[in-house]
Image (tube, rainbow, N blue to C red; front, side, top):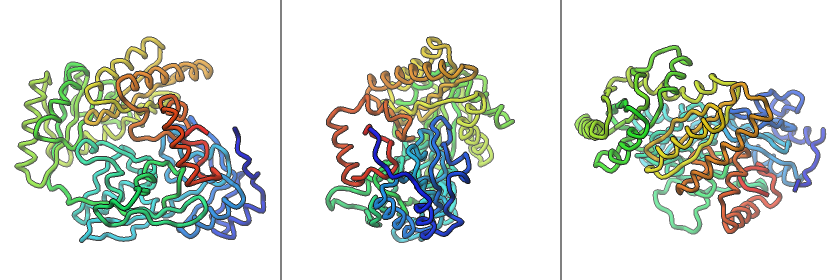
Length: 468
């Protein structure tokens, strides 16, 4: 049922300009196409106005105005999402937070970094490492803003050892739907003081509040790192090796799986060769630690386990140049697949580790069943899989029908294996129906109740995450 939002008027435009100035408030007719979709472009809608904010005070004033006038507000960072989470589906105000990109503080004693939400993930990592610290979350899209990472609880490749974004958010400054500014959490390590509103905000995709500052937990920077590229004769034998490695006393930093087709696409996209592309499937393992001896013992034990599980060989990458070659290819997988087709969409499921191979092999069956190309890679160490359905030359009606059928089967299969519909990219707009299909009535009521408490007028990123 549509909400009775106010139709945006010239007087609203002038009111917003009185808050932020004329240059940072852009009317609909002057908004670039990039602001009407996110990275995959399948979800499209243009806002009535784009507002480039510079401070929490401006965000507060805008939300006070939007709440009073009943105008929807969609927060946006770099727009690198894949599920339409930062697309203004109901028009209104698109709140561009990318200009709030300052480092506020590095607290060496408490091992925290305080940043604004527009700081890029790659800059967070670089800033920390240059000062001897380590920010572990490592999503593949390094140009994403940290606010977006927090809003989707991004995971990434190092989650198997270090956890996900939520594990590294100590505190948040958040502007609520009514414009009030609240401080959640802080620099403290432990907190049992009532409900954890900070943790509730992480992963809420801008539907409960707008993040304007974050206190991030840091670790000491590991001094040594090494990667192993391990070819296997087939995907099943590669995935079967993963539990053996993780059950051992040597926890890898990352365990990625990849198939030959994706590697070949990345080689073509980057214009350079992968260290090896002869096998059908690969595991990519990384180990880090405080000493070379610790790392050497870890990778040696893992290599022996992989060979016992059927690995064809073990390639050791122990220099920055070799590591960069391998991880540059891994980081280019999404763009490489995207460049190989006319359009694509993604299934970002997570299943128990022991079911990874079964799920990927099931996706191959769907490729044959629906006569559509499907490519996959993902985080074998934590069961988070990225399955991409490629449109190629399918005409529009058949593409939509095929996509819906394939997604339906993939999400149903994930559910039957004890999995969930999203491991790290969120629900946004595109995946909302699939979440609704797997939530119990009680879960839906609880989620709607939480949304209503934080945002009773439903002006914050409406149409996202939960069915209304």
